[in-house]
Length: 155
Image 1 (cartoon, rainbow, N blue to C red):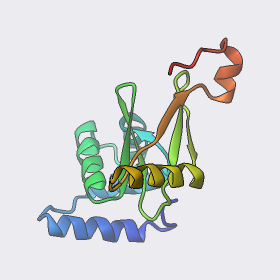
Image 2 (cartoon, rainbow, N blue to C red):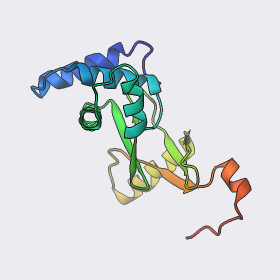
Image 3 (tube, rainbow, N blue to C red):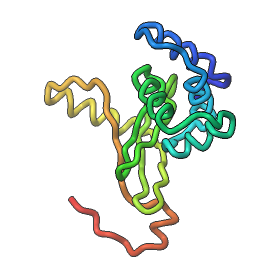
């Protein structure tokens, strides 16, 4: 969950901008505020709508640019779903993985120490050093599964 005030995130962004000789902008600040307020997996279009509530002058291009900066600064993570990018705040959040509904697009976060331990064990056995990972499982959420006939899971 983003920090309550967003203060830490703003400090992280300011430090990143300074290190990379980038200027602070009101549009980027408004985008960060809306992004943190959304607090979940948000598309560029959805974030644009949120930002425009307070800043009608912000367009799609500044949103894309801001999200790239947020990712590079370690404030956001990107999840590509069927050609559409979704972004979520990650600053000071525990690692988690995702179930993604292929019918309605719902994203369900989950944590599993058992899966994490198994990944670590397999990596050790292979002499592989994990630096990070994304675990995304595609299927149907409860509502969509109830509406559709059971699909055969490919192996």
